[in-house]
Image (cartoon, rainbow, N blue to C red; front, side, top):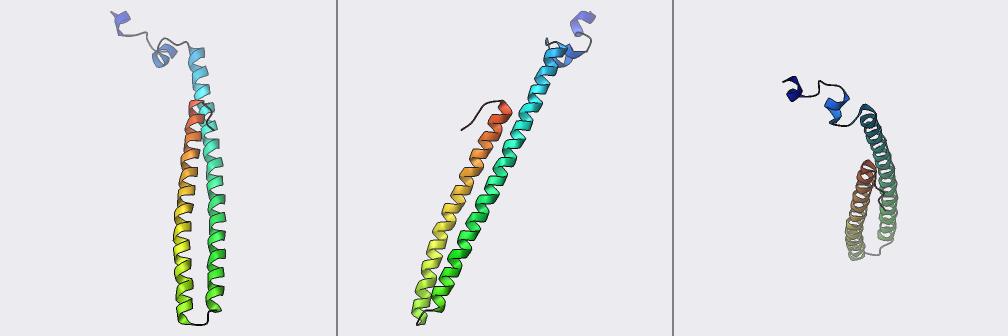
Length: 122
């Protein structure tokens, strides 16, 4: 009757029919995969941060260029034209930058999941 209940504990109770050594090897492999996944996440986070800094620098440079141009305008209509152009360009730039960051996040997420699964992603 006790035989019907189970094998009485030990590695077999945790890992099914797997021996203690095989179970340990699988757990070690899972730990290594999680470490690789964490490394990919850290690398991706750094890349996204650097890209955002580049984008902020571009946005600041464009804003100062527009301010210089507006400061040298001859009349209010020219200032309004410059401001309108800047706003349109900044809107397009913001959408492009958000798309670029989103694509980077998706890719580094795929890379991190692939590392956790033990597969290589390009």
